[in-house]
Image (tube, rainbow, N blue to C red; front, side, top):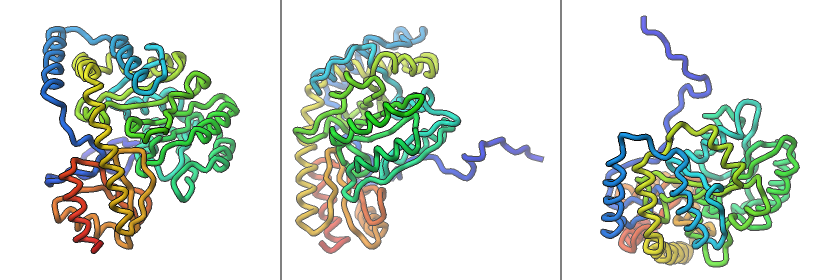
Length: 366
């Protein structure tokens, strides 16, 4: 008799998270940066990894203050906001950063709140930490309805509020007034409430769109997360981080696993940060390609959500799966995600976007 596994009831029958990984010529489905690191970046990363390898018999620096200083320096240049290194935290991708937040501030008897549609991993972070998950609805244009958001915070008294800006899958940026309103409502929650603004795509925001980093100084219950996966083109390196008050960061140090950030990961991230100006130069071209894609789609009569990210949500289609499949049949993989009738395309190289456009014209008869 084969013994049964004592799988938690809420996990029974579930499939692991993940977008389709298919071998096709044009991959535009997971919001990757289409540009590989330059030879100069590769060489410096290789040197840094070789040096780190000499000490792999020892555990890595568990508090990685040198990396935190480099990240703080980068944020000051990118956003104009000064954050102390003690106010920086990093982990293996922003996914692990989010998990640390839910481990520290969520848990049984507590609630995490967000606003749909939004990133599909958020409820999984809640589930994995036995945190109750609730959502309120965004406005029709996918912006945050301030009155509805404030009312939801008051109704549910969450210990964590998750706000993505730009929002995934819609690309919608968080308006400063909406962020301030949610922070004020969270400050009134009995027992406290942490507001997390997930800026995984923050570097792609349009000129004049502020970062939530500008709100940090006045809000010790705010955390702003970033990643090196998107703008830096380092999705394979797995380095995410956040900025917050040092007291909030100290809470995350309690729940992180010992030596969770390897010496190799730290070396790769620091070497890449030394090339931040070069890597950020690609962001401008991706922004321009995104805006051109928005214009092209709208000129063909499609509805396109306003976007400050490196992707575009567009529709509406009576049978979006048929359109998705038709693109795939022509070697172009995009994402079937978001509200019914919508599709999302990541911004690739000019050649990749031309292939996407040509395929969409054929499939949708535009």
